[in-house]
Length: 194
Image (cartoon, rainbow, N blue to C red; front, side, top):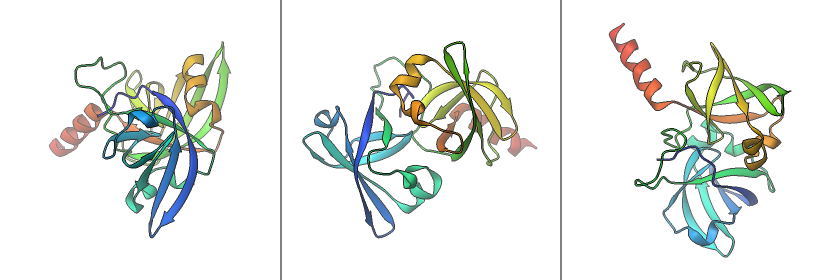
């Protein structure tokens, strides 16, 4: 479990294809605090630490993960949002995030508005968003501002813009999306009753 509050930014140091999987080496200031088998969210996708060396660690994304996320598009020196798993006696500053990416969305618009940024994303899944509801974009817990079928917008404050990889997102980029877990359960129950 995660909160969607990004701890730090990692740098992709190396990428190695192993059969249908990809092993990523991530340079991060939290590397020396990690342990093998620990879960870390990478752009919102939960991956298991498989080895640690000095200021970097390695994780492996399997084919299923690569098909459902934007991780397969990462290149060396790309920046990745990182969050370690939630401590159960800590505050839940964001919202309940599983680290299970539902789909990707495409950035269709970026507008600057009074010192903040408005990002608009389109997606093709059947999941829904609601205005003032929660959404996770590349692992960042956010509030939906505008919600339409297959589209939503979020406002990014300067702190979030500067301390996540939102500052690198351009129009046309794919991002990882995890819809609100409570909303997914409500939607499933409603569909079952219909």
